[in-house]
View 1 (tube, helix red, strand yellow):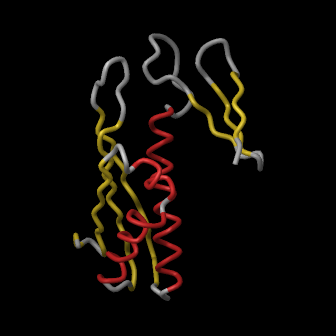
View 2: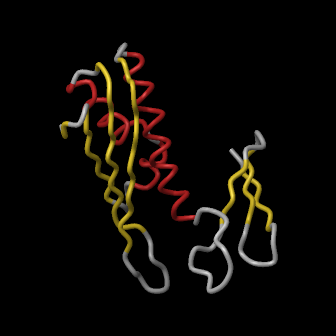
View 3: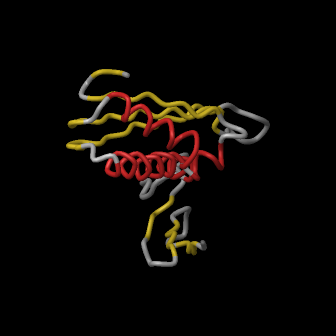
Length: 141
C-alpha cells in the first residue's frame, strides 16, 4: 500500500492520492490565517477508524442476512498534551444501526470489528483505548 502527497498551495494544503487515484485534501486546522480547505491529519485518522469498522460491521451483518436500512457512526478522539505533541489517548465510536437486525448480531458484529478485524483500530490499540457503543433502532445495547 502506498500513498502520494503533493503540496498544492503556498501554505499547508496538501492533496493525498492513493494508488487508484482517489484524492483527499489535508490542511492545518490551527493555521493563523486563511480558510481551512481540508481535513486535518488527526481527523483523517478518526475517519479511518470509522470507515474500517463500518466496512467490517456492514460486511458481517450482510453475511448474516441482517437487513440494514441505515448505518451512521460518530467517532470522537480524546487527546492529551504530551511534550510537544497532542496524540489521541482514547477513541470512542458510536455505531447507529437501523433495520431488521437482532441485538445479539449487532453487538457481535461491532465487537468483532473492533477486537479482531479492523486493521486501523488494531494498529492503534497498543497505545490508545478504543471503545464503542451500539445503538440499534434507537436503543443503546
